[in-house]
Image (cartoon, rainbow, N blue to C red; front, top):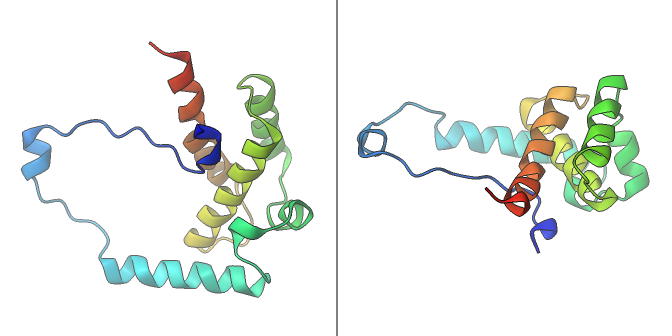
Length: 126
């Protein structure tokens, strides 16, 4: 079942101090503008990232040598399936779109793979 989820994030409980502290972050309006700009980039490619066919994904998320190594490690060491890798690549493309980046960096790909890594940690147990 977890393989069907694109983003898997463990969120630890907050302490009362953390809960009551009002932090400063991006405003909703700022985040909204970034999301709209990312959607425009996706529309310019002809389809939203979630619906990119695998062949188009290879073009939209072209990996450099470092990105290729990250994927190889995720498959060979982490046991990630091809389906999970493709979903992570779509998430990485979205991360790059949100950052306004033309190319998917190894950092964006690493972040996306981390969102998938929760499944492996969860299944391994304590």
